[in-house]
Amino acid sequence: MSKNIRLSRRNLLVQLCVGACALTLGGCRKLSESAWFTRILSFGEKATYKTQRLFLPRKAMAQEFLETERSPHFRSNGTSLPKSKTYKTMADRGFADYRLEVGGLVEHPSGFSLADIRALPSRTQTTRHDCVEGWSAVGTWKGVRLSTLLEMVHPKPHARFVVFHCADPMKGDGSSPYYESIDMEDAFHPQTILAYALNDMPLPIANGAPLRLRLERQLGYKMAKYVMRIELVEDFSKIAGGKGGYWEDRGYEWYAGI
Ligand SMILES: Nc1nc2c(c(=O)[nH]1)N[C@H]1C(S)=C(S)[C@@H](COP(=O)(O)O)O[C@H]1N2
Ligand SMILES: [Mo]
Image (cartoon, rainbow, N blue to C red; front, side):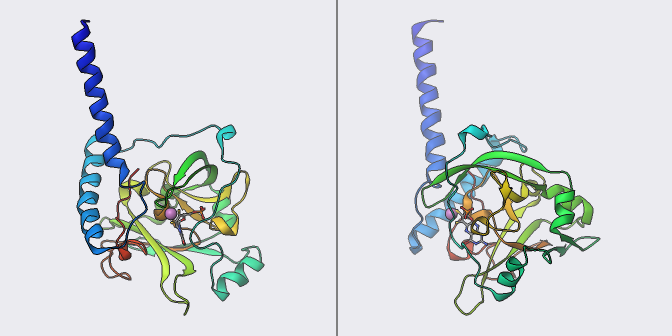
């Protein structure tokens, strides 16, 4: 191979890297809530969603790490203890009467206790969590694949999104519970799990006990903690602010790919 070809190849690689960094940079910066930023964001969001759908194979896996690479401490962010009486009572009883409701556009709406969920086949994965506020942490998560639960309830053909309703009210008056949504492609991704353990211990309350979503190819705010109810829908425009998530209703991108 001539020197020239090697050089130009290197150049191309550098350019590809710069391009890739530019694509992910949006996810590294703390989001401003200003109107102009939100407008730019929603343009970038469409571009990122399309670019990722174009270049990444549909089932591309997020990087997994060794257990020895775990962060010494997996911090908590956002809610660390839901301010709801029902939740606190449930937590005091060790979540013995917790039931995950799965309904909406499904043939068999169902409820699952934690024991039911723990009895299903599990998946364990050590992954890096990236928060939009600029911190990351590596942790080992164990849980049930979301696809396993969905296959049990039989989604109807027109179900397009999975909505996660959480226990934590985001307003002082107890209203505006945290919520999130993902599409069916991410819902059936093998690394999309509902986790009940972190670093070989039962999931701490600070990290979303008894059950939290892990969605390894998107940013932290997509990974709903304290999941109480899962609803399959054709469209989320009638739920809360209509943008598919608590932070999305406040200007964050719906597809937060890393
Ligand atoms: N129900 C709920 N889920 C949530 C949040 C929240 O405040 N409430 N915060 C999100 C954000 S911004 C991040 S970065 C992660 C933090 O997860 P951790 O507390 O396990 O670090 O949870 C996400 N899921
Ligand atoms: Mo976050």
